[in-house]
Image 1: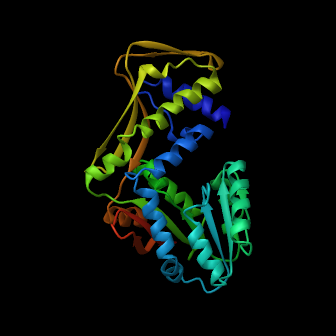
Image 2: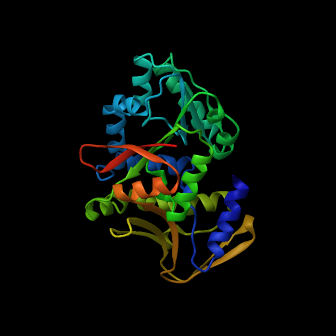
Image 3: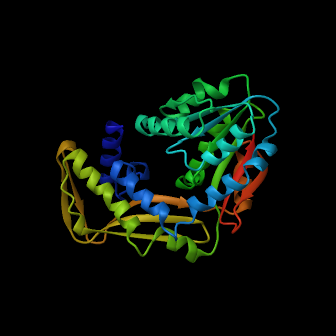
Amino acid sequence: MNNEFANDVIKGLTSKNKHLPSKYFYDNAGSLIFQEIMEMPEYYLTASEFEILSSQAKQIIEAINFNQPFNIVELGAGDGLKTFNLLEYLVENNIDFYYVPIDISQGAMDSLIKSLKKKLPKLSIHPQVGDYFEILSKKNVKTTIPSLLLFLGSNIGNYNEQEAINLLQLFNNSMKNGDGLLLGVDIKKNPKKIHEAYYDKHGITKRFNINLLIRINKEFDANFNIENFDFYCYYNPISGNVKSYIISLKDQKVQLKKLDIVVDFKANELIWTELSKKYSLDEINELATKCNFKIIDHFLDQKNYFTDTLLIK
């Protein structure tokens, strides 16, 4: 990861239009700040999806209609908070299934397993640590029993249109006919609601972005002065794109000693850090069709802010 991070930092900060991948937000400090984001009243995404998986677990499982034991394969399981109510429903109703959480972090996986063994001791857990594409291609969903893949939390929104198509096609190629994919997607809505969730008045999202510079300072012996940088984001309600940026407030040079580079910044120059795309239901339908999926149903929260959409290969 460190080598990949180094390569991405060099590539991103030496490009004409500077950029850094959002996946590097989540060091220990960044993960804690993201917990703060999820607790903000303006940040509706987590609560909306939690509501769906809490109140509609029965409907989702009935819709997938597996009449035999099956796998639930969660891609990027993290702390498992969103999934818990779905797993609890299955365990309490004696439904025969195997939970296969996949995460790149061993620490996150250890914490998840410990928590689930305490709360759901009857749960059959088969954890996998690593890149989920490698794991999907080798194990789990290649078994003889059906699988329901979970790609939750609006993670699909971090990919542009072509990247999202490529991603879903990769999922599709790793699945058997009849396998399902439960896809968490943030829905287009009042632009003010979305803007407030990502450009919050508390400044938490700013800290989340600026922490990426602090991480680079620590890992690559860099000298970013965070007082010389600010944060901005905007939402385009037509395209559905939320784009986030770090802004250089002055002409400055930043040295990254371990990477042996010096980066020049002009006043008001941007570093693009994140894309968070929002979809209409019609756009989700089009995306699914392009990737050889059939949509079974959109499971929405009461406010129609978010959907966990069930697709079948």
